[in-house]
Length: 450
Image (cartoon, rainbow, N blue to C red):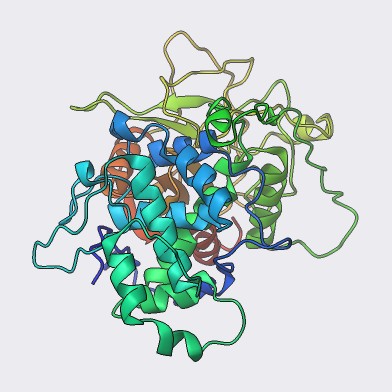
């Protein structure tokens, strides 16, 4: 068996709120063929620099020994003509984002658990990172039906010589894809292919569209190639909804999807306008505020409040059709910054917190809604930069606030607790999800009016 380190996530809901939850979507069916073809290539945005940033967002203590591992996957994957991006995501799953908490240890350079059959059997070791990457990719090609003349791994050599996969491969029609490989690779796991797919979705949903933080890594993977031109994610355009265009109001979930899609097109995963109101861009007089979490016993990442309160009617009428460019929410952790303008908008606040007070900042009071116009609930989003999400419910000013908080895998509870302590006092976590889309769908199910 293959030794794997991962923490399966399940939906966790408060006992006070019994809910019926639909099963996770079977997105593993979207995994591509193992071998590259003219129509099956690695997306251009999957550069070593972006992949390393994605890895660091999931594991803040990656050993420097692995600082160029993504470049190795690209270089060797191109040579072997294999979809190395999916192999990279499988490596993250197998090694627990290079934490190596199972039988295989980091100094073995074994990124696929080759030869690790359980019961503390560590498996094979390889001389360096590149050799270990090649062993992983060759083993995948063996599963895909390719004969290898000189396999790096002894495990691969034995499986090929003994014809272990031959009968299974004969039952398959057409090119073999990663979903089929996953079922044979980890036959006792029902989630293996889905877990790989979720990691891929997390990367291609946002980090892949952010500016490449380390474009020079591309030269290591493809010597002689110029650094990839990266998007600066500037001037994202969000069309203002025409209030008179339709008599029916779109659902909150539909508005969320529109906002997410617009943000992804612009190169940022920032979501705006997640309520039942029309999609309204930010104006110079109403910008978002990036706020860090309070001091913790250990150094914590910054949390970015993504969508703020809806601007008053006069601000909406004067709003431009373009929004201010925002830094991607899931870039590398930095010290929190505070953007100040004439008006400050606040994120979802829990009971006992009337407004966000920032040192040295003054803000004008926001017009209050009449009791008849006040919504009973609202959906917010915030991010610590991770690919998983939790929903936090907090009540303030006679309104239930549901915050979809993007968190890092393995740190869900700590980051949720830090957010609640700082911005949602008295709140509670009512759900955990493997990606933001699932969390948004559930949030708008809990609060249809958004």
